[in-house]
Image (cartoon, rainbow, N blue to C red; front, top):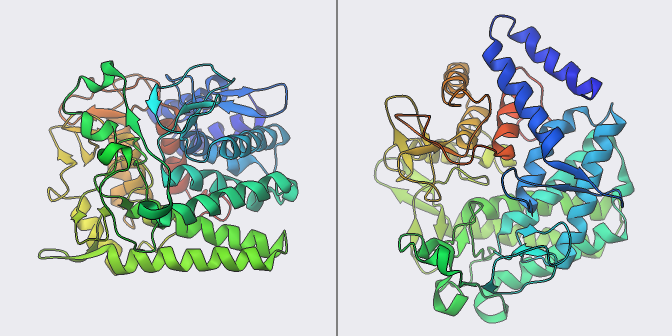
Length: 435
């Protein structure tokens, strides 16, 4: 075990000298990520599996190493691992900006979908957040280490690729060639899952009108969007476009590109504020989860991040923002169709998992975006009592019986718990928005 990681574990032990359960959850989660999901390659890059699936998701891999950023400035090994993840992600984005997950080697395996595939592609569900997470990771890594060597010509090409893709998907109806049709008969035999697995209109998705926002085919759950403009993903895009604007100005000194990025950021944010807010008879003005620019909207939230609940965590707004507080009340109520209450727990789940299953990821976000110490303590108790005695976090678990859970090996959830626990004791990722 890395000595600085052990020091971080010992720090948690010092906070909980009489609560071995908390210590075990933290220690096992950190070790799970370090020892079983990070695979260093001969070229110096690091391939990150999610746990029980042998592919690398741009989103999950970024989130899995986030707690380690707290050590990156003082530990060369940890710094090298995170840098290796960033370098791997650069190659992946350039290879296929419409993909969400990648193989370790070419032709290792993939879904047989009708869409844009490359030999490195595991799955090509276009999700706006998949292009946001690697920029967030690179930016936070730089803030933590001051190592600007990651901002090379390859990163510049990544930034251009993301910008061009976002510009195209602002005009999905008229400019995009992206289509996605799932053909796997084993997956598609589940009638209830079909709307979430494939896109309508021969793979183009439901009809949308221009709003200034970026169209997304899929949510961070990898479920298809009902309407094309996923508000929390666009919130995340606003944040990372701000990061890229700063980097192009300060590091690359490309003021023309920086201006283009800033303009795109403003257009997306205007789209959110003009099309993504609806009036609710109980909660007042709230953010919708998805809209189409044609007047249709969806009021809900999903456990996966980016979510509406995670808006302050992403850095889009403050925890005390009135519109956010209105939205939060809706999300943590029965008016959110994926909010569940049971005998053991309550919280937000996902259509990706069965009804009455809530997610540890959502519990972590609920705690990290709360201004209440009592909330954080309550959520910590939920973590302790809903791991089904495995000392690891899961995907979804049943609100009445935590022994009923999905994905026994889910590194993203372990990392989210670790970050939550560090945060409630004042240990924040350098320059993270909740600091």
